[in-house]
Length: 108
Image (tube, rainbow, N blue to C red):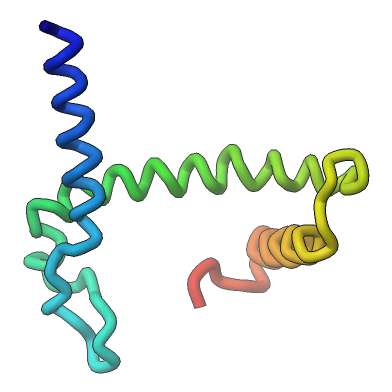
């Protein structure tokens, strides 16, 4: 019984998370892009569920995945990175170096 409840909760969370991308975009800036300056934009029920998931995804991406990729980039032949992947990782490393040196804002 307990496993069924957990399974139903996980399925519900995944469904709401997937539908969170469909949350209304009616609060936009002049270019038509969504903006969080209006509190009603953030208080959409589906968006309230997906914002913590989005935050967790960013923490995993930039805290775990990218450093792992940077470690792999030191021996590209051993792990089979293509030339395109090597160029992408070099660009990402250069962007991080500029950001950490204070030369570049994170969002431009």
